[in-house]
Length: 124
Image (tube, rainbow, N blue to C red):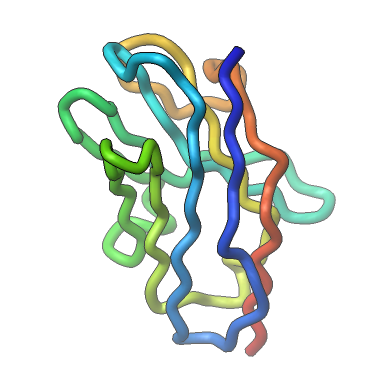
């Protein structure tokens, strides 16, 4: 069973930065894809960014490209989401997710395992 635990959310002001963490309990990271999603009240869960664990290849939603960065630390079994130049519209619950596979996955229904979410609130 794969478990994911997010942390690092909070209340910040527009223009600030925040880093989210996602600790993953998994035996092997071969052919594992990890993603970040977010969900605002009344909205559908939307893709933010993702990483292929074995290659480090990352890809992003257009709304966060250039502001957010996904990375991972193999030694700590942890994925990160560095968020810079935050905007009020970035306010949402942020989730990390994982699945087996080495492809490009940017839809929520493509992921198998999910964390509990962490709230990010950006005030104007």
